[in-house]
Length: 456
Image 1: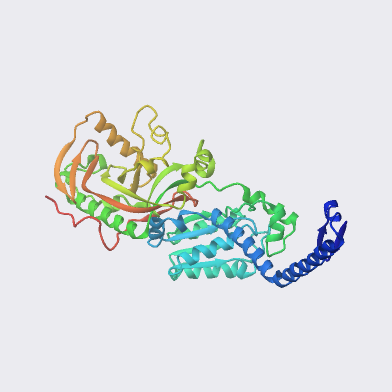
Image 2: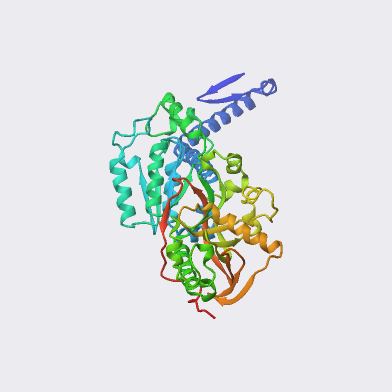
């Protein structure tokens, strides 16, 4: 026997039919009363139930977002502190509806005291494959340039699909102009590349076909010109000043002025090393892997390494143990920790000196300046020449103390200052995506990490 009451079903088995009539009538009456109570309760609780279901779905969505956004920039305390001392341009990249705006707002809120969020949505720029000269971005670019020129924020966040390489190149040029380190971040939500889900999630109401047209431009990750640790603005200023002090005092150091032939000058000539090393990187950094935008063998494999993916946008403190000068370059020797060595390629030293054997990380350095027509890569080669001489027991001349360390002369115009106290510089691990060869003139900061140099 089956009795239907509203949407509720009471099922009476054959055992129930065997009950006496009075008992059966009582049971049915009680059942009817219970069903009415359940139905009434469901009606009254419908708003609460809907609210609970929505809350559950929202919590799950937030969980998906959180799992996708656990980047060092948001959760690592050392990184958060370091970012506040840096100049960073965050470029958010991904399909419409993938979670970029949520991530952008989360970063903005985390650094609300000194950040600026600039969104394509606010300028009504609809994601599409379009010619680059239609002018949709004029107002957005005006806002971005004004923000950078007036130094309105040290952390600038750009929320857009960023699927067009030509537009990206323009943003990289702007970052170079204003000395910003670039971070390219993508949402890691489970649906980020699922056009079927994105069709319902994107507020532009883009069709499945429109999303599929955009997807190929965003599926492949961008590989930079090189990966490396980029020195924060604050520590960069102090390191440049320290370098400047060292070069000025070495220029006036009598033993140096007696050994100028390797530099193309007669001995005892006055050589201004600041002018001699007139080129310096736009942003001081320690390169880990040169990739040439993915053209170098092994670069894409390096970009996919777990350590690289986890380390991207994370802050690291580098330790400088020595400053050195050769007729070609001026640089700083960096001593890497075990954690930092996980980001160091196995073949970094073999790439430039295949016939020699060096401990992993020996080539780690920061280029402080180069002579005319000398490329930055030469600095690492010069550093390995120093280490090669040290390994072979090559002769070096101890010439006393200057600038907080002991100065040694090796051969062929090679000078090294072993620091009595290591210099610590905060850095952000990222990539350089701009044009090769961008340099800046030698310049100093307001404070030096080392005390004022005195010739002993």
